Structures are given as structure tokens and as C-alpha cells.
Image 1 (tube, rainbow, N blue to C red):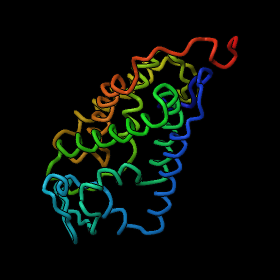
Image 2 (image 1 turned 90 degrees about the vertical axis):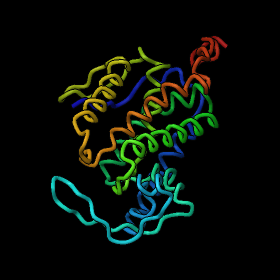
Image 3 (image 1 turned 180 degrees about the vertical axis):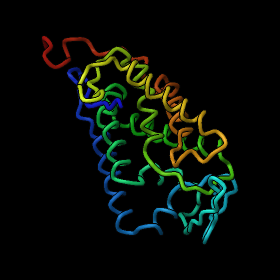
Image 4 (image 1 turned 135 degrees about the vertical axis):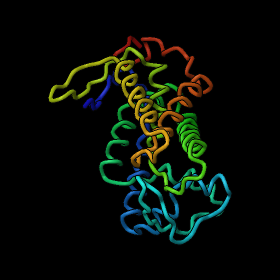
Length: 245
């Protein structure tokens, strides 16, 4: 297992308030999930069938998995139902799901926000999340399994980081040792795992993980970062912390 722990933020110039705010919102929405339960989760998560058919499924439904029929209760969502593409981006299935996503956002989000600015980073993040959800939806147009999680949007952040900081050292936990790997190795391994996992579950339900959303978000991040200022050169040394000015 390879788990990133931190990266080098020595050249960061601004306080990443948007990154912090996104983490806070995700935590707040998770607490709302715990409070309201299944009715909120299965109403405000993104269901591919609802998006592709512009309908809000309500009531007991059935999912076929491994030859078995599994019941699932769907509840009324927002109007229009397309708003679930946004709301699902801030929802999670478990503490572990939330914690893992927020760790990645904490490590990699601040650097992208620092490079392109607060407002652009927020728009970039949301667009990557939407692209991720649409990628998963187009791959499973008739699925009634609710999709939720920030991982698609965060995958876009990882794609941008790979473009802007491929050689930056990232501290990762490998087995029981902490080692420094270049970002291109850490993130290259991550996206390779997503692609491999997606190929391995083609035709199935994906084991509850929306790998296509991860891939779609990552590709969106690779492309969008150029439109959001990714070509901008780093600031001169004199304006960096410890510089001469």
C-alpha cells in the first residue's frame, strides 16, 4: 500500500482558504448524512439513470449483482435532479472514504490553489467533479446505484498536480516506511491503479467504487489546468518565502 502523507509546500505564497473551505464543507455534509441517514443519502446522491432519463426515482428498486437481486430504496432528490451532480460531490459513504479523500485534497489542493488563485481553483474543482460524475454516468447510463464522493473532483486536482509539479517530492508511506517519491511516480501509480481496476470490473458493478469517475476527473484536470493558468511560470525567487525582497 502506498499512502501519501505530505508534500513540499515551501514555495506556497497564499493561505489556501478554498481548499480549507472545501474540506470543511465535506465534513459538514458528512455530519448531515449521519443525522438524516438513508433518506438524505439516497435522495441527494447522483444516480446515473436519473441523470440520463431526467427523472427522479422514488421507492423500492432492485439491483442485480452476482446473479442476486438486492433491494435499494431511493428517495426524492432536488429539483431539477441534475443538482445531484453537484451535491453528490460533497457526500461520502464512510469515515474512511471521507478521511482518504480529504487527505488527498489537503496534500495536493493547496498547491493548485496557490498557482491559479482562489476563485479559479474553486471553479476548476467543481468542473473536474462534474466531469467525473458525467464520465461515470455515461459509462453506466442505466445504473440505479447512487454515486457519491469527492474523489472525482480530487482526481482532477491530482491531474493538475502531475502537470505542474511532476518532480516535487511527496512523502509516502510504503509498507511501514516513509519515503520521498517524485509526484510523477505517486500520481502515475495512482491513475494506473484506477485504470487497471476499471478494466477489471468492466461489465460488473465495480465493487462500489466509481473508477470511471476517478479517470474522468483526472483527465479533466490534465486538460483544464492549462485553461486555468497552468502554463504560468512560478513566481521569481525574490517573492517567495525566504527570498531577497
